[in-house]
Length: 165
Image (cartoon, rainbow, N blue to C red; front, side):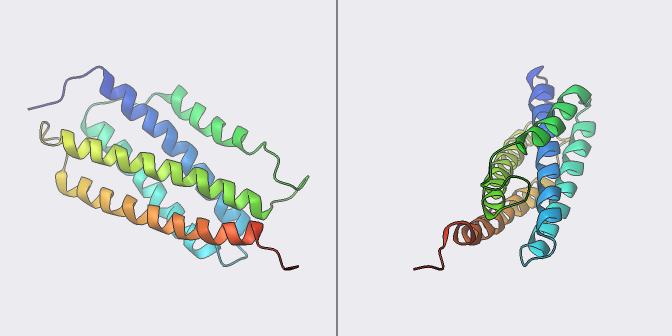
C-alpha cells in the first residue's frame, strides 16, 4: 500500500525548509563556540543534523516527493534573518546569543522528532518507508533533545550567573 496525499509533499518540504534553517543555526553555533567547551558537543550535533537532513531528502526521494527550492531558500533566509536580534552586545556574540540559539535549536530538534514519529506511523501504510531507519532516526532525535537541553542548561548559568554574589 502507498500513501496518496497532496498534503504530504507540503509537509515534507516544510520540514526540509526547517531542517535547512536548523542546520545553518547548528553550524553557526559551532563557529561561535569552537574555542570553548561547548564546541565539541555542538560539532557532533551539527554533523548529526546534517545526516538527518540527508535522510529526509532520501525519504522524500523514496516517496517521489520533489524538493521545493523556494521553501529551502526561505528556510536558509529565515535563519540568517534570525541573527538580527539584540543580544546585549553591539557587534559580538554573547552568552545570551548562545542561550537563545540553543533554545531555537531545541525547537527544531523537537519538530524533527515529530516528523520522524509521523513518518513511522505512516510506515504501516506505505512500504517505501523503512521502519527500522525511522526507529533509528527517532532514537537519535530523542538523544539530540537531551544533549541540547544539557547544553541549554549550562548556557543559562553562563548567561545569567553573577560573580558579584
